[in-house]
Amino acid sequence: MIEFTLDTLRFFERVKKYKFFLITCFLTCTISVFLYAFLVPEQFTSTAVFRSLKPENIKLSIDNSSSANLNYLFTDPNSPERSNLYCYELLNSRRFAEKTIIKFKLANYFKITDKDSLKVKDLAVKNYYSKVLRSSYDEVSELVKVSITTKDKELSL
Image 1 (cartoon, helix red, strand yellow):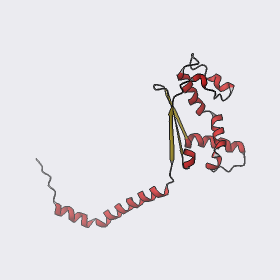
Image 2 (cartoon, helix red, strand yellow; image 1 turned 180 degrees about the horizontal axis):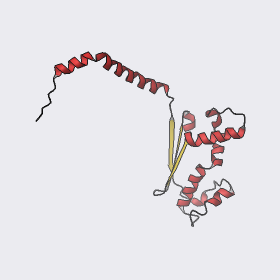
Image 3 (tube, rainbow, N blue to C red; image 1 turned 180 degrees about the vertical axis):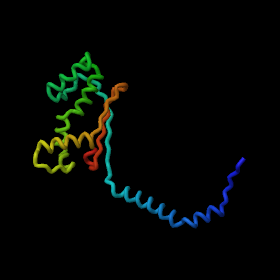
Image 4 (cartoon, helix red, strand yellow; image 1 turned 90 degrees about the vertical axis):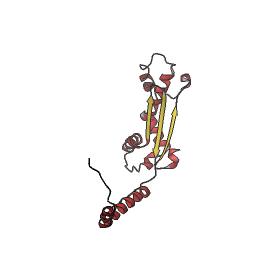
């Protein structure tokens, strides 16, 4: 059987021999972590989880076509599952994104400076769904989850 013994004298000799290399590695890692922590902008996240309990009280129709598109999903129009899915579909609709972008001036937040207003709106909607809004629908618990992540504390509240 082979026994491994720790020869402390030999260990400290090697540490002494490579001390500049070890100190340099340690300082490089430490400085890079501090730089990353202080230079990366803060991000604020707000999350809400909800369930629509009274589907007959939902009056959030985007337009006639979008509410009609959901009719095929469930046969019972008053089912809570349908209203929860409707809320989820509403959160992911283009019109909801456009109204949110206008209300909170997200084109300025995304620093879009194009002169074409349609291009600005398209870029803002793309950035809104890729960088700001996260939504999901859990079919088992019938809950809708919405998360907003921004670099501006006021927008995340």
